[in-house]
Image (tube, rainbow, N blue to C red; front, side, top):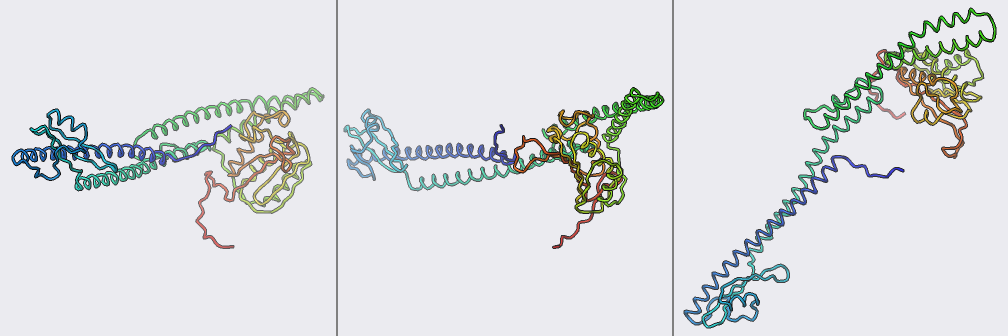
Length: 442
């Protein structure tokens, strides 16, 4: 079973990571700066309170009276810790927190008569305002860092994601058969990073595979070409044998071998991508009806909608005959051919196409399941697909099942659909570039 996942872009992942790291760093620095500023201000306030309590002590010892603001003797609110230090004969300061975050600054000094003089002040409003302004500046700076990091992540991630998308698109083109595409050229750019390493690796792999496929194609073509002469000689010699059942068997096998050699040569030519369509204007429905009638057999042709197309008649006939031969060999009658515009359908009422063919398309020397492909070499549909590709057409396959039937229900027939293109390929194998037409409301 496939696990459902959330698809996200690389730019957003990178942006989120940078924003998260920026936020954590900004929060940590803000806390450090806030605490450092608060401790510094409290230290300054304690030093000031210590100096003031010394002045108050001198004035009291000289005049015998308390004449300093906020100075008291044996203040009942004096913190016990500070009172204990003063009773030990030591001058000390103390900071206590009030509800709401405000701080009280205490300073105490022992007197000669055994009493304790203390001075009580609060955290000044100016210091509180400075700390609040600092906190506000830290918050604004943190938000700016997070937003800036996010924007930088989107920019960097967008560029990297764009290069990866170009590389993926180029790799898909290579997989579709465009052998002249190179991933490194597709991504472009001046910066060299891991994407370039990936592109070069894909290009190297593509070139290696192309060399192996080309070597395989050449070997196949050479073997088939070398077999043509002895097979032709064998067929000629078989025709000189005296009439009889053994002669018929030898002729039948020799003809089958010659057909196989010709098919292998045709597949090799199609794989070389050197074939070009020879275009003509034809009336599709009339062309299909005449060719099917000339071939003979119990085939019904219906023209639902006639159209004129520009295509290669020889290759179109080859595709049509291969589809009919496949339907006659592996399917069951009635066999029906329908033409609707630029679409040609060939249907039989047999057991349907093998699942492997529906999933991966036709493949040489793979005939599929025994119920539909007990005979043959799997070259007929491969040649049909290759000739359709040369014409710029598309060949698809599907099975017919009753409406509402499950996917594993037995098929009631197979349908091969040939989709001819609206614009035929040129002699170079490419498609013509037509000027943009203004869209009208017809």
